[in-house]
Image (tube, rainbow, N blue to C red; front, side):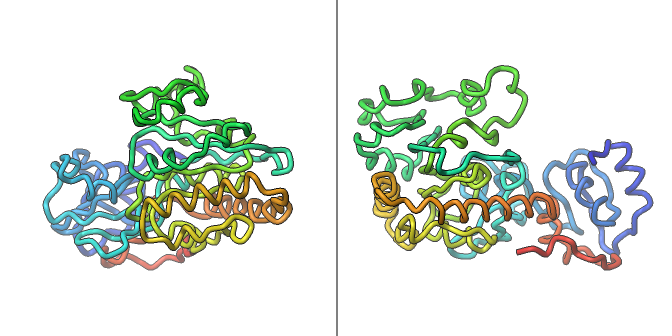
Length: 339
């Protein structure tokens, strides 16, 4: 149920007041009213909350903002701001609270039904912005792959790989926003949605996806990996070391030994991506893909994702990271202690 600002104000007045000062805007009020906490409302505050004098930043891309602070991502926040992250760095980062839970886990489409693996064929790889690990995917995709059914595009493809452009499902669109890029597929009528999270035709038709995740130095799961899970399909990931292992911590199953995941333990980025692409290649060319076993894994993963969607929320995860900083509230049963 979505509450209006007026309704949240009215509820807030009736809630228990903590013993320390908690001050936030309407985006934090949306969290606090659902966890029985009265706050001081300051409409000027966005995606942050002050507990006493300490600022806590939350919301999408909080972990990414730390890595991009030199680009001005944190200019409007105090230097000692603590970031409730959407990712896990290999080593602890000052003023960063690690969390594997990211908004796209809940923001990505979850179709009620999906085609079986037996009815699918080919592969997909849809990438927009240029990143070293995505360039590495392009470096390792063999031309023989284009003999299979495929959905492929890389908007920021390197000039050195211009020979792959004729194989793309649409011409690359460098320099344009991702919203415009995705609207090519979904039509103008969907232009006000979050297009990257929509379930696309390649998530219904392809047998395997090569995922070029957003980050390659920390675990940060986005719609790029959630869409094949929601779509009931196997995938390999070009991302950080240990990405597949961390997926298992959510309760998901990964695809080894039916798809080789030894790439997940490789330290070197270029080698790791090369191994991931080779794993997909070996699977595509295999005469015994063991689809029945993979179907069980994909079905299990959809059930886990559905459970996450229906028993918790991104806001619940933010609250759990911050609740112990707020003093003097009555203890409530925690309904979000899964994983």
